[in-house]
Length: 442
Ligand SMILES: Nc1ncnc2c1ncn2[C@@H]1O[C@H](COP(=O)(O)OP(=O)(O)OP(=O)(O)O)[C@@H](O)[C@H]1O
Ligand SMILES: [Mg+2]
Image 1 (cartoon, rainbow, N blue to C red):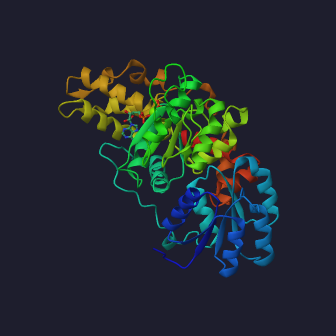
Image 2: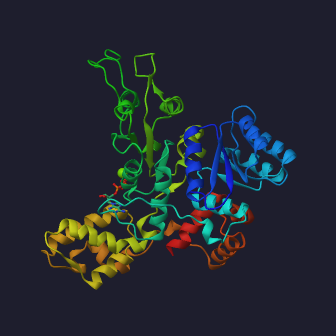
Image 3: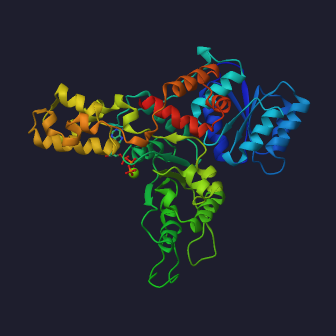
C-alpha cells in the first residue's frame, strides 16, 4: 500500500538483500523498484528517476561509488543513501564528500534506516508517512513488554519474509533461540523444517560433514551416506548456533553455500542444490572477531545485513515481572503470586544469566513456596540480597555525566541519526551504540 507517491530504487546484487530492504521500504508505505547492478540502476533512473536511491557500495561491474558519481552528474538533486560494509567505511566517507546524502554501515539498524529515508524524503515528523511495522501475532508465552524487545520483534518481522541470512546476537540466555523461532514461524518457510545445529565443541572435520553431508566411504567410519543439516533444512530454515565458533577453514565453504545455493558433500565433487535459509546466533561480538581475524569479514557481511541484537535483561527491566509471572504460571500447578518484596528483588538484580537465569529462579521459587506466594526467601540468596548482588561488574563502562550529556545532545542535534552523531563525536557507530546501551542501562 503506497500512502504517498514516493518511490525508492533499491540497488544490490544480492536478491535476498534487495527483498529484505525492499520489504522494509514497503512497510513504510513507500514504493519500491529494484536493480541488481549499477548498470541496471542507471538505466532504471534514466527511464524514470525515483525519489531516492538505496545503493550498496559493493557491486559487481560498476561500483556503487561510480554509480553515485554518474547519478550526481546526470541528476544532481536525486537523494542517494549508501549502504556499506564496515571495511568500506573510509570509502564511504570519501563518497559522502563526493555527493552521497548519507550512508549506513552494515549491519543496518532499521530505526536508523527509517530515519535516514524519511529525512531524505522530507517526511520526518509526518505521522502519515510512518507505517509502523506490522507484527504478526506473538506465540503463546512469548513476553515482549519493553520497547527494546518490541524493536527486536519488529526487526524479526521485517527480516522474516526474506531469504536473506540473519545473525542474531546477544548474551547467553537472552532469548536468541526464541527469536530464531519467530523468524522461522513468520517466514514463508514456516511449514518447512527448522533444523538446529551447533558449531561449538565439534572437531572441524565432523562439523563439515554434519553441515554439508558426506558420501558413503568418504572417510573411515562413513558406512552410509549422510545428507547433512543444510539439506535436512531444505525448504525451511537452518539455525546455526554459536556461529562464532565455526572454524576458519569452514567459513569459505559456508559462504559459498550461501552464495550459490549449493552444497558439496564431503567425498563428492558434485554440488547439490538446496533451498535453505540460514539463521545464525552468536553470543560473541562477531565484529570484534572479524577485527581479530578469527571470523571472515565477507561471511560476516553476508550473514549480518540487518542488526538483530537481543538486549540483555538488565537493559529491559520492563520485561522482568511479565516474564516472572509467565514462568510462575508455567511451573506452578495453581496460580502463585509474587510478593511485592520478591518483585522488588527481581527488579533490582542485574541478571548476568538473563532470561534463563530468571526462569530457573522462578522454577526454584515455585517449588519452595508450595504453590502460594513467592517471598524473597524463596529466591536464590544472591537475588534476594539486592545490596550484595545488585552491583554491576566494574567494567560495564559507566559514563560520566558530561559524556552522557554530550552524547544525548549530539543525538538530538542529529535528529537521532546515530551514524551522523557518531561522526560528529568522532567515534565509530558501534562505539556509540555501546555507549547508548550503557546509558539505557543506568
Ligand atoms: N521473550 C521471552 N518470552 C518468554 N520466554 C523467553 C523469552 N526469552 C527467553 N525466554 C526463555 O528463556 C530461556 C532462554 O532463552 P534462549 O534459549 O532463547 O536463550 P539464548 O539466547 O539462545 O541462550 P544461549 O546463548 O545460552 O543459547 C528459554 O527457556 C526461553 O524459552
Ligand atoms: Mg541458544
